[in-house]
Structure formats: C-alpha cells, structure tokens
Amino acid sequence: MPIPGTPSRAELVDHLVRTRIAGDVATPRENNLSHYRQLANGVRNFWLGLELGDRWSDEQDVLAVMAERVGVNDDPEYRYGQDTIDPQLTVDGLDRMAARLRKAAEGRQRVLFATGHPGGLLDVHRATAAALREAGCEIVVIPQGLQTDEGYVWQVADVAVLEHGATLWHTHSGEPMKAILTALERAGRPLPDLVVADHGWAGYAGRHGVDSVGYADCNDPALFIGEAEGVVQVAVPLDDHVVSPRHYDPMVAYLLTEAGLMEAEL
Image 1 (cartoon, rainbow, N blue to C red):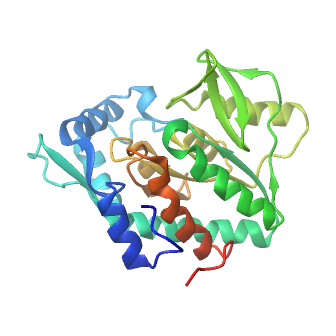
Image 2: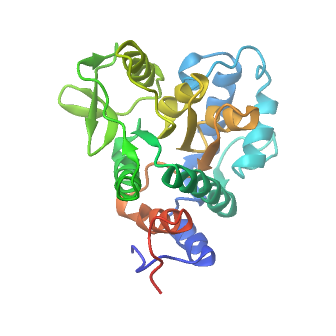
C-alpha cells in the first residue's frame, strides 16, 4: 500500500474496498441519516455552498439520491450500524471527472483547486494541479488578503485552503470560495474555467456558474444533489479522510491516466 503503478479498474475497486475509501466505510449509518435530515431541515452548513431552496425538504428524497449516486443502504428503516459506498460508483465518478480534466487540458483552461478537507484530500488536489500545469493549464492564483468569519483564505501547493490559528482548517462552508470568486471579479480577472474541489468550495463554485467537480463523503449529500440538479458537474463518492492520505495515491494515478495526464505504468 499504495499499490505500484496505475491500477486497472478492477484493481482500483479492490484497493478502495481494502483501504475503506469505499465499500464498508467508517462513517456510521446514524451519522449519515442525521446529516440527510439536517440538509432537509434547511441547516445551511449542510448545503455545502449550494442554494437548495425547499426542493429537498423530505429526508427520504435525500436518502434516495444517496442510494442511487453513492450506494448507501436504501432502506429507510435501517438506522444504525455500518453504511457503504459502492466502489463501482466511485470509479464511475472518477471516469466522469477524468473526462472533464481531459477537456481542461486540451483547452489549456484556467483551473482553481480548493479543499475543505486538507487532512485527507490536499495532496489529491496538489497532484492533479501539477499534472494539469504540466499539460499547459493555468492554475489560478488566488488574490491575497482574503478572509471569512472562519479564518484566512490561503493557497498551499496550488490548493486554496482555509487557515485558522496557524492550522489548515476543515470547513463545509462555501464562503471561502465566494471570497475568491468575488475578489477575482472585483479585480477584473477572469473566473476559472473549472474548479476542482470538495465541500462548500465545490458547491459554491457550481452555484456561481463555474464548472465544478469534486469529491464528497456519504454523510455530505449536498454535492450529489447538486450533481443531480446539474449545478455540480461531477461528485465522486468516497471516504474523504481515511487512515493514511497515501491510500488515495492509486486513485489519483487512475484518474490522471484516464484523463490522459499520466502514462500508464504496465
């Protein structure tokens, strides 16, 4: 671990299950249902930067989307215990993301990377940014001096993050992405052609009309709802904080190879 070279689809599925990136994941069922309920009840922190109105006020509708797009148990009476992410749906999401990354590379587009989960996904985004830069894309440099109520908006290794108290901060908020896009517009700079992110960074970008792709856990339903509504282009289901960030390396190798950004290692 990580497995050498670029995995085949079958090898990646096996790896995702063994490392609990997908399959039987660490997030318990009761936590999933609690988050689905809070989204349905209009708690904005669970909307991940999107504007859902009253369209998703039924918890069972949220569960149905998550069963279809993530692979959680679809039985509303199953309320406690283990829940799941279908690894085939994870790889399907990676394939869709790869297609959008390929388009960005072919067009040498401007791409912005951001994460609200730096402990798990910072290096996933950093490696993807490096591959797109090598392909001729412009990796957007964010304006300086930005902050929100939670902290400062910084850029580390080409990835926008929230910093608070000299620590990279876990956040679901869309406010950091709002701060970036608003500052770009005020400075007369073009918006990104694509945002690659997670949490509220991905959600707010899509809401603002920017092409947005990202990663989301089984207890973060908003991005999957955004994808279902066409506001977010791709939401890849995975556990976004497993025991080692290195477990994501084979997934990144697969993604970049499918996007034509890395030579497959045989």
